[in-house]
Image (cartoon, rainbow, N blue to C red; front, side, top):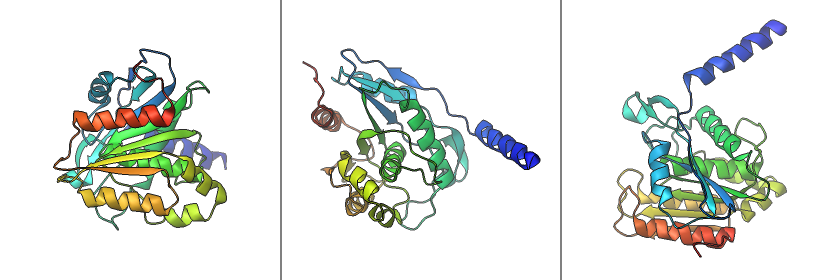
Length: 256
């Protein structure tokens, strides 16, 4: 028994060693600290570029935490290693999900939020694969557990997904409908999705299908905003919408 336990723990240590998360960059609030948002970058990007985008936003009451994903071989890139929150193949409704990678990243993100002061509201946002990670975290929050059954420790108050999709949507509705508590949490969580109509990397229909899956699972507090002519990138007008939404949903003092 003790032998099995020691070999298991060394196994999990090895797994952690092979997938180390990169550097975390923090943008401190310029005013009173009312909210902390984790922002998750897209495939092959890093936390530094996220922090540079967020630094310029007129949101003095938000502390931004911008982690960097582990470097791993990515199936959709033919096994080429780059920063990725989880492994992803071709985007498709019935493609397999990397549930282990999703849970490991969701736990890393939740741990970064778990040390925030109790009076500070916490949320998760992201772009592309980072948005997928934010939406997966939203489902973990609603169910109170990660996919692997471990307890989800954070009380999310806002989730933002730009140009993303929802991993693991197939069984989501049944899981949440089966629990009053999960349905209550899903209904309480505001989610803001933006997606470009001309996105050639994560086509708009995936954003739309994700919004439908989340809505039918009981995430009623959800907005999907299409951006006509926008490709797979962010623009200032989209970030303005994100700012306005956060100020309203989190009751921030704003840039006054």
